[in-house]
Amino acid sequence: MDKRDYYDVLGVPKGANKDEIKAAYRKLALQFHPDRNKSPEATERFKEVSEAYAILSDDEKRNQYDQFGRAGIYERYNPEDIFRGADFDSIFRDIGGFGGIFEQLLRGFGGFGFQGFAGPQRPSRGEDLVYDLGISFDEAAHGVSREIEVPRLAQCNVCGGSGAQPGSQRKTCKTCNGRGQVQQVRRSGFAQMIQITTCPRCNGEGTIVEKPCKNCGGSGLMRNSTKLQVKVPAGADEGQSLRLRGEGNMVQGGRAGDLYVRIHLRPHEYFKREGDNILYETRISFPKAAMGGELEVPSIDGKASLKVPPGTKAGTIFRLEGKGFPHVEGSGRGDELVRVDVDIPRDLNKRERELLLELARLRGENL
Image (tube, rainbow, N blue to C red; front, side, top):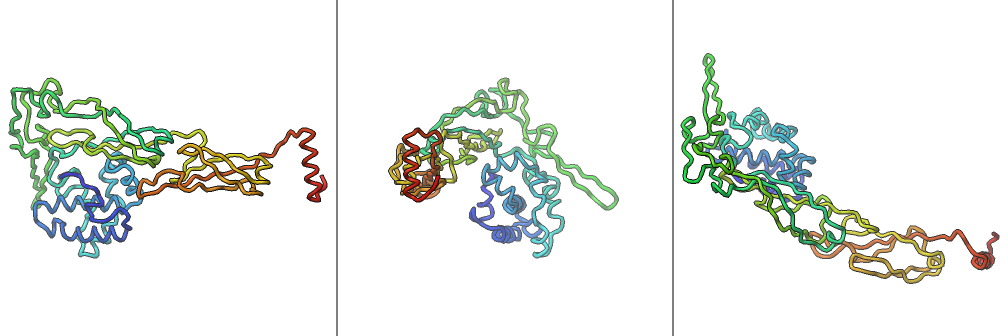
């Protein structure tokens, strides 16, 4: 089964709270639990919604998924970690209790394993990949198209992914008769234990290669580097991931996983980013702070000017509306925040001292 978005699996929006997620899972659990629904698809659907609930009901796992998708989950958590801590007990206690749900999920309802309740057969989807891309501050502000080179598993160009040497064919595995699984029955008194495991001869594929492809060694896959064009949208931020569907690793007999391009911003010489706003710090002279005047500052669009009012104090922040980063979601842009400090001169010449003393006397100060 193709791996769908966890939010789509539960039928909830990305902003759903924990109560909404729990309610959606409870409804689907009632519908698809194998003890109540005997259809062939029910067990797989129950596993799918349970995995989605385990991730989205946990703040840390949900944050990891929102940033990096399934690649971030499967790289960080093993199957036991994914389900550990999820509140299944209260849900199933409320609806009659199915007992030992956590253990059943890990066993895959009969020892079928974590990769699917239908058995450890050939995966239908390859692994997701993560690529770290560094871009400049200006590229993040205006958007950029970059070419990247990604090492990944691709279909063998000699055997076409079959794993068999051209001119030969794959044959049905005689050990499992093409099922990809073997079943062992153990009896102890009146008890009977059935264990289903991956076929050791064909590794769950159901077929074997008599003459393996010399180019890929029978795997049907080969590692190569692929050049891809990535369009980074204006307003991209540090840690944001761009999803390129079908550009991950291939898997024999299935489709490719996805590629997640993770954005990293290189520091700017004098700008700092605060959300979609830009912070710029500068200094103004004592006369300009006292009397006011025009101040020219850099912006991501070139130059901008602002009016400094008389009596401006050190630490004052001015706002240039619409001079920040474009909003990735929605229209409009952030602002540029200009923080000014007052430059107090230390080494005064004779004339400057005379003028300042005169100013002090006019203001009734004794220096």
